[in-house]
Image (cartoon, rainbow, N blue to C red):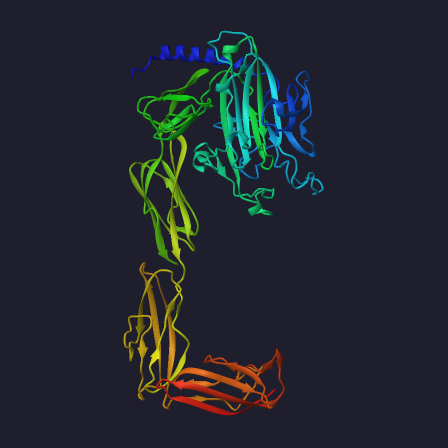
Length: 638
């Protein structure tokens, strides 16, 4: 590609500036963008579509086309307390689609919008003011219809000079799975005395094919809302339910060219219709630009080498698109759509967009200059890592393009978390000590390029490892003791018991120990280490009794005191406790358990008993299989 000389470039830019000025002079009709905050210069209508959508559905017409002012809202048909048409002058967020009610699209900020429709339905509709039904449960057929229209006097001029109307729309539709012509919908209609201009009059609805065609709906830009419908389901099998069957489509820009109709009048209409049966709602937002100067590319006019940039034009209905970029630039996505993402190359140049359908052919060019500096670039190592609680983490990166850097994230840093880069490539690093899982971000700037680059990686912290080796225990000589260590670590762990004395295998979580008369007690420590290297420890004390297996029951206890407050059996060498029961002096059972270590706290139905004698019975089986049965009395002392 050969670049023009300096003077040729200036001539080309001057010519483009002249064309742009000529286009800018083509302002759109007054208040077409609702800048008056009302319906001045517009017509509006509301109605019912039981006989189908279209002009035959209109019941009430409001004409402000010859007035500079009008109302800012109109009610739904037969619903005086519900707005069916309303001007929006303050941004908020749509509750179903979570998009702004007044959009900014590809750098162009709209200032006003209009909302056509509501969540009201003609069947099973509740009045928004007092919560009372406005129609019977099996109410009239047909849903609500709302529309607005503007009669545009297209200015005279050469047909080769575009005169465009650009609007943006967003929608919220409740899926009715009706045939397409009866589904909730929104649409734009462009007509002349000769009839509707079909190629500039798209209809937007949820497609059906014996049911909702969700794949096509998603391909058309619709997404299901997480918010259920405010209206009860009409299907008998879902009666009384509020289904999650609302779909939304965020803001999309559309343009059309009226230059073939210069010197004529063209009628622009926007409409939003409920389903024809009347039980599913639709509402749509529309916003319009106030400049009718032809196609305009949105995007940065100055870029950094190697940066990713987005350029777009308002779409044409059913159009084909063609983009060209400067030499060395690469289109990453969107080459056949109204929006492209490109990787900026080493040279400045022209972005050119062309779009065409059966009734319009538009194009625009945008010259993009380059900053002197390249886009910052660095390689982080490691990208993500997992460390044990309390460990330090080295953060490292190799800066390929950049003049200064800074690290940010949770926890503390050791070393320089920011600084300058005298030369490239250069390695930078810092030590981080996170207290919990955190994301760290490296911000790099490069002098001459105002676009900073942020790169990040995640440090996952394994929580402190807690190991439970079990409760301290009492065994008799030659009784096998089964240990069971449990680690809180989510990763698979290896276990090590120390000392290994009298354990069958000290390298597992559940070893077995057997003890002779030479021991009185022994303390074990077990360490659990996971696959990452994080570890924790716990301990358990084993006391060895020089006696045969038996069950011992105290003769008295003192509930509510600091010690001896629980009446329970002491099991030595007992493999299982069949029961431990306590009776009052009338033979009534007051407590029972079969779990070793548990006992009676001296309360009956929550009331602490007075000093008295109680009967008890206990039965258990020792580790040799011998059954031990005992009975006796004990005194509760207050």
